[in-house]
Image (tube, rainbow, N blue to C red; front, top):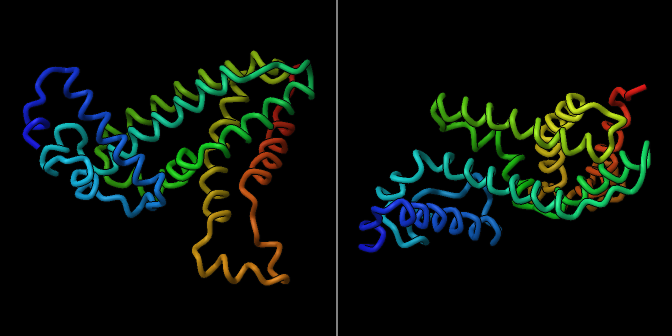
Length: 219
């Protein structure tokens, strides 16, 4: 505990901040629901006093928001590194959307945090923090849209930016319905309720392809 109290240098403070994020990430990765993560438990597992955590994050939600950024940045970097352009026209657009869908589905923490944005993460933040988050989101959408345009130039970057915005909303709704509460999951095993069952990865790919094909194309 004393080691954390003595963190004064910028690199020490960044180390403590990263340690808190890693602790929260480990909790969520072990099955803890986003809504159930508490700052007290994060502090306890990190070996810090809760009062010290406020040196790095104004609220639990601010910590979760930082995790959101880390997850999206990691996803984007991995997508750029792995993407291989398959050709031109619809073939390139379809391949891009399939890879986007598959890469998102492969990051369950990213999807869970994104799904919790409107209901949990954004609820206990200062106006200034929310404003900064939204502005940074616009910048991120724009940068990602430009990458999409380079991969499949038949669609303009501004249309891709709108698609990315829609994808965030799609993730939120689809994740909730494809990860139902245990009692709902049991009920949905009934054959007559098959329509209500969701497969997150395949449904996300299908819906992203549909949204992409609805975008205006360059002549």
